[in-house]
Amino acid sequence: MNPPELIPSEGAIFNTSIFAVFVLITLFVVYRASSQSTSSDYFAAGGSFSGAQNGIALSGDFLSAASFLGIAGAIAVHGYDGFLYSIGFLVAWLINLLLLAERTRNTGRFTMGDVIAFRMRARPVRAAAAASTLAITFVYLIAQMAGAGGLVALLLDVKSTGGQALVIAVVGLVMMLYVLVGGMKGTTWVQIIKATMLLLCAALITIFLLGKFGYSMTHLLQEAAQNNPKGDAIFAPGVQYGKSELTKIDFVSLSLALVLGVGGLPHVLMRFYTVPNAREARRSSVWAIWAMTAFYLCTLIIGYGAAALVGTDAILDAPGAENSAAPLLAYRIGGTVLLGIVSAVAFATILAVVAGLTLTASASFAHDIYANAMRRGRTDSDSVVRVARITALVIGAASILGGILVNGQNIAFLVGLAFAFAASANLSTILYSLFWKRFNTTGTLWGIYSGLISCLLLVIFSPVVSGASDSIFPSVDFAFFPLKNPGIVSIPISFICGFIGTLAAREEVDEDRLAEMEVRQLTGIGGVRG
Image 1 (cartoon, rainbow, N blue to C red):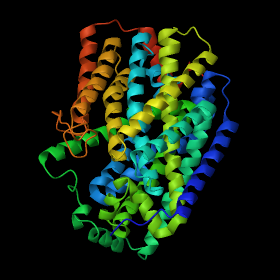
Image 2: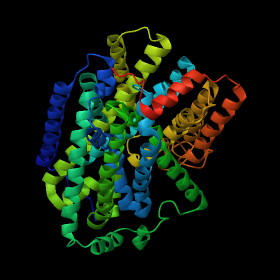
Image 3: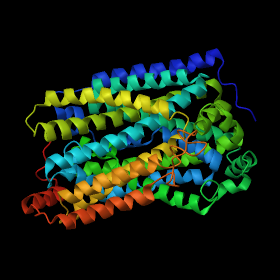
Image 4: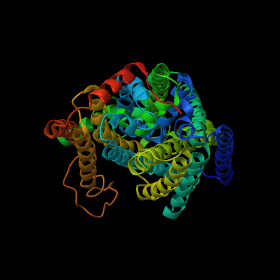
């Protein structure tokens, strides 16, 4: 089955028009919602959102192009193994709900650095926290930018590298506008709008799709197996990760990264500061989990439906490859109109996520490095916000270049790498800081830097970068680490180094700060807002 001809000129104009309308409406919302009189307004919206609002925004922040495009494509091509991304992403939220949401909200103010530096030497710890935040954000951002390039290549038949690079640049520029104009409050409303659109769109496609098969899942799955070269094997584990012992280990490594990575994602942790108290932080997690559960159930049907109606070969032959499954399916069941709607939602997804990521990275640099490490707290809100805006421009430009470099890679896979970085660099230090009284500054630094550096080196010298046909640089081979996801090695390294560094340093524990942190974690008393 050949890919459908999606790009009559009127179809391209319709798709572009829908996207342009969305951008204009959301920019207006961002402008009206923006309130940036203090750094608290810019970074945390003054803690003004309810748990329900923040939960929907959290789902909007988390349900990225990887969820909408990458996972649907992975299910269409690899079946059960593709759905494992959804399971990992969803189960991971229990860590936030049970261990982190309330405690980080009570202890911190704007960033992850506030939590892990609370009872440590502030300057080196904040610098380390900012370094890990910037690294994780960059990897996550380039995945979203790659999704933008692949999506537009499909919708507008832009097959040239230069044309896709131009599209990625445009997405990056619009993202910068959201962050510069709206801050956290404007970005949050974009997330809420985008999450609502995404959930409605996924439900709409699912209902129309099931209608094509008489609302019979059995019929749909039978057609999916017939149009996939792997046949009935797509309903069991092993199509992608069961080819050899090495791929099985790679799957375990990916699973660890997905399940443990959410608890270390800076842009997710930062969202807990936009609510007024710990109770609303917990409600945020509950709302986010329910919204994402509904969405991931829809992606399961959409993925197998794409295999059934479009066919695996047609998906892989289309511009964007696996990332094209959902748009191709939308065209098959709803024509140009539904394709245009899906296109706008996919673009909204990318724009909203990259805006949230950029805001987080710029906040970390401005608050942790500039305001606290460099200026030692002797600065004003206007200066901090100004530095954050400049940082957003630099990060936006870097992410555009990175997105151009990795354009064509599966987005869900790239996001899996970001989760490996988050779990390796951040999770150990956050958990140790919150739950281990003896944990100290040396342990914090060893935990962050060992996880970050080991993860980075293992990725550089893995088949992700070189030595394979689907590598970023397929023409060279300097890979010696065989796994595509390094989590199974880098995550334990971080926990072990944090533990050893703490025992080796023999630093005195600041009992007063420890007691204050324990009280604030559990009660919220003493927290500073504004």
